[in-house]
Length: 75
Image: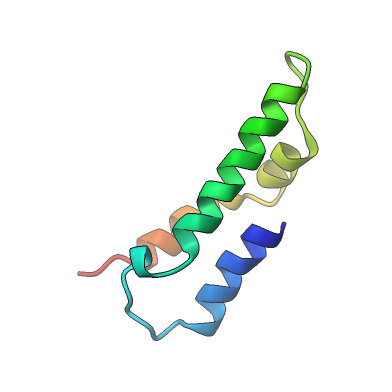
């Protein structure tokens, strides 16, 4: 939850900033989220969904990331 909140906080606080995403802490937070999901998957029995994956699905985090990224594309 910490890494997701850090990403959303960035977009809330810096909506007018046009810095490239690579110059922000977003890639690091996304990488940490991925690492957590992979570790959780490796520790689970086959077919079980862990709490982090449940959170990601329940809160539609991938859809939100898509929307934020699409809106942030330089044209």
